[in-house]
Length: 35
Image (cartoon, rainbow, N blue to C red; front, side):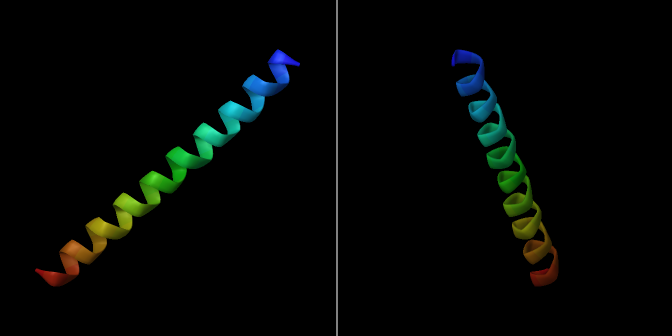
């Protein structure tokens, strides 16, 4: 049960991290377009 919970937590962390990277990348692109 604990391993299962850790697995779900890891997957959530990875997808959150991926989301953050995509948001940062989008902000970076908008920044470059404004300049």
